[in-house]
Length: 194
Image (cartoon, rainbow, N blue to C red; front, side, top):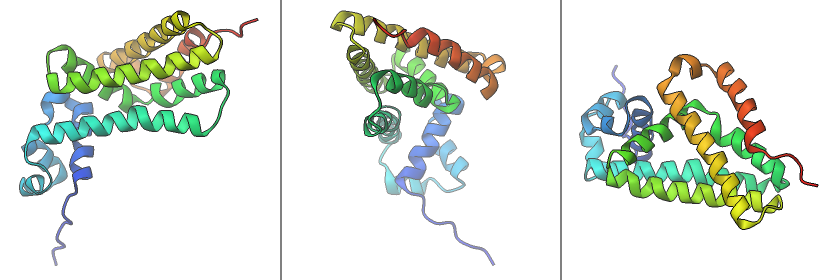
């Protein structure tokens, strides 16, 4: 007896689109290939979305929520002191290979002129930088110093995302990434101020 597959939801399509971005980049987000990956017909897509761009937009908004808002909300709920929050931020957001590869793919699409991605990715950058700068400000840095520290820390994170995407041999294992994380933490978490 054959069991019918349950109807796919919007979130099924969005999650699969994010997996495709991880595996193939933004250009890989195509209705037919995602339907194949979900083992459903394209009809399920049109029940949830009108166009591929609508799916991509929903995936980008979901990514922004998961990679920025949820991380910030988690850190703020824990009520950690600023130094511990900065360390926790880099532990949460920076060292999951899936996060790093999706972010690298979005950066590539943004830089090559995909305006749909660029708008959201620039907003993600602004939110991340502002939050990191606010932590450095809480550590006692004035506004310009906090912004410099935040840009340096964020640039380090972006560089790690690019390395993970480009050099899967070196950064393909969690062990290598963990060693790298410890080195980076020593750079982005400043020593106690007197």
